[in-house]
Image (cartoon, rainbow, N blue to C red; front, top):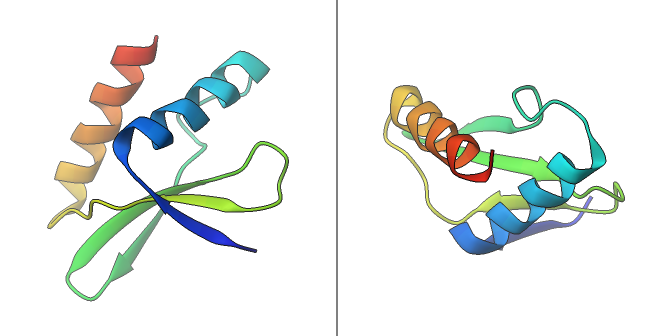
Length: 75
């Protein structure tokens, strides 16, 4: 699966596509650890790629706080 590293605005656009399709956004993201950093990504709605946020986070709490703020913003 092709991974595309995207900026926050592009990540948000993908979340909006998923939101409009109906599934729960809480269980949507994939969280991974790269070295000492955490990354968040989501699968393309057509299941032909993955969108990974360029920004990484130093701890899981920061990542979840960022994602929660993003969900609040698009809700």
